[in-house]
Length: 499
Image (cartoon, rainbow, N blue to C red; front, side, top):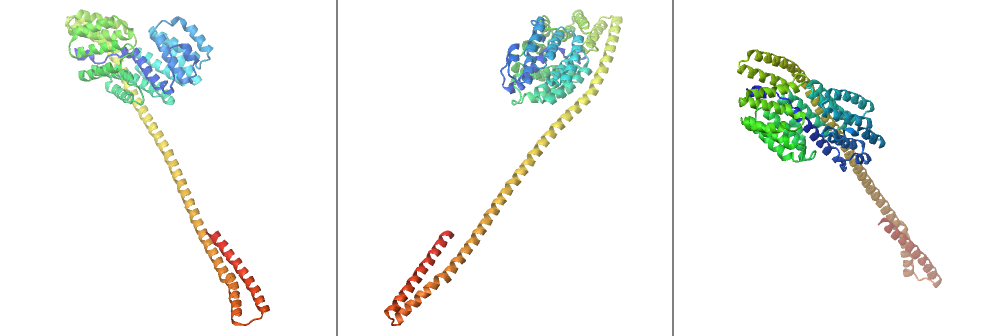
């Protein structure tokens, strides 16, 4: 009986917690990256000098707190619209719709919320408001998940993911991955859910991307899946991690208490689990109650309090109104099984038939989602290919510039070498030219007066000359000496120029 009823359980108990923690991730990835100071007051956000994306994220987080998690501001929608218009906020009309949608979700008016979301998506598409468009797709997926319309929910998660890809925002992409994992877990495709959660875990455990406290949402989802897979060791592992990193997170004590009773159920301590579950049912919101009530009914059955178990199963059938639901399927099976054990065969047959009809509808949905999961895998492959292509393109550009710079450096070195070589050659030619010129001066212009001087000296020595002749020789000798001195000075100047 334990394994029959534990199989496929709805995960709507995770919805509100998931929403808030996902946006903790968004703020830490987006707004923190812009180094802006967070504030919880509307006017301070509207007056800030932040860019539109940062302001939109801050407003969305504020609206989650004020309108989804509280009713204190429901009567202030008109004042909110006035403030948005006063400060000429980009997307003011869309944010007014977002606040209204959160209120409808909180009041469980899912049909009205879906209508408003479809209108909001059309508006955001028309005005090309990418971040708000992402928000509307994401919230529509949440609403359709609560309506047990997994096929439509995954379609809108895909649209949200495409928009997040355009924004290149890791936090937004993680939100989508967690939401898709929630859908797969909801319909019992646990391994596919773990693929998405493992990818998200890989991202959040990278300290460059996200602070450690944001890991709790991933660990909590994985703990729940391992509970449904009947793996107590893995459940306890992620239970410890959730407790470690979930400190200060919204409503964390309720979720930790839920993980506590999961552990008790897997350990077959059903009476202790019943006490914890009843405590949880006394508080909290609608999102949690049917899942807790199911495990209460299951535990009551295990301790043989059959009438109480059936009563809780009927309460689930009253609450579960939207589409084929694994929760309602298990409630029908439980009532039928108890009736059979109590020899109420007609009642047992009726509820088994109801369970069969529910199962058929649920199986059709499950098959449709399973087929769509193939397209999701293709999306992931396309995204991975695109990412690799961008890396390759970037590396190719870097390589091209590296080659260009290297070629330019080589060209500069070559030109420098060529210039040095030509200069050296020019200097060598200049040296040879000047050497030849000096040699010419020495051999012709210097030696000529020297030869004359020698000749005059010989005349003065070898011949007896008159005084007049000697005086004439002395004048010529002086001229030749002056000429020789002048030529030597020219040689000296040439030598200096050469050096």
